[in-house]
Length: 156
Image (cartoon, rainbow, N blue to C red; front, top):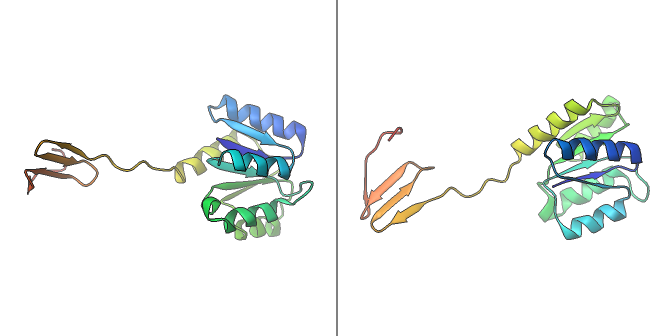
């Protein structure tokens, strides 16, 4: 799930529509208060965050997310009209993982979102298999029979 906090209705609808049609489930929020309620219900895999918002600016939201242990490593992409080099540096220094100034190309945004999701993908623990006396751990390339290691090549 991707959360988009964007007060401009047309941008929010376009980005949400485009990401959903790219196979990325996305939910848009107009106001920070709605966003925080959504965060209480479900933590997303990624947040797209505008800076200039009603109620609370995006940089303060970013800082709150980075200072909260459950959301500290949550990938955050700034999507904002503040596009000067100084603004980008401030956003990245505050903890954003990426920064896309408006106007932006939709294909580039989708590619950046997918790249960020790939880099921050939550990996499942590597499977281990035990059947009677046989133990196999493919990730560590370990095979034992009755506790005795079996010497195998990487291909085997």
